[in-house]
Length: 289
Image (tube, rainbow, N blue to C red; front, top):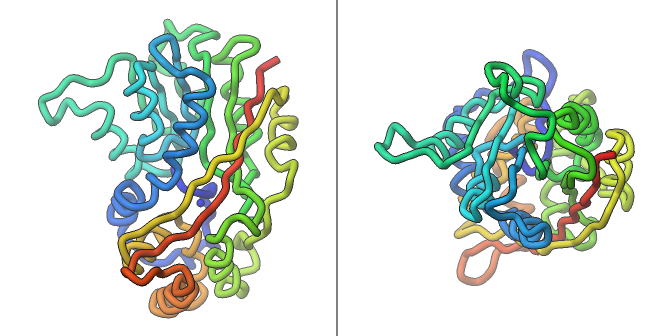
């Protein structure tokens, strides 16, 4: 589920549901994005991210992972295409000149692809970065790894040899309580056969992506990333902000999706009204040749 907890998927042309993109981006930044904080922390701790780190974040979304790296002293650059509202929020977090404060040193945010980083930056060296991250987890929607290999390959000219590249994915469905909720999107979106459908994560998903990008696997790990919400309303807003349910809304309507999503969340609601869904995510560290 960049900016999202899954890679962006768009329904057929003419069927995109009417949503407020700014409200969705805020819901993502304020509710959903934080669910992957344990993943970011585990990776940064393992790779000893600090003042010597020059990080390139692919699909940086609203920038929480970059902010956490910057707080460790890293110089950070983020690129994202197709999510201007989230990138605007990343600029508020990392380049807050409008609020009268100084931007974090070494920070750059670009709306586009890795190749666009060279535009207007003639001093950008081939070894400009010594860590690349692509934290959008794959492995819950059919085809959600499409384009990731090309995105990683596009970043290779900006890094030297042996640089770690981190990609992430959902863990086994039996260890991801949210998997049962995500199936609602598949069930309701079935009439739109071109839309992505839920599928369980496979053991070698990340390794296959790394291989397609010409990277060498060099370690992996698993991290508990429970999805916790103050109440069902917050859970619905957070999950809708991922974009996973847009095709379902287009196939039915918003009221139907909200109803079935709430029903799917009911088993995960605790007595105090909070919603809690334990999940396991996996990350792979690969190296550039």
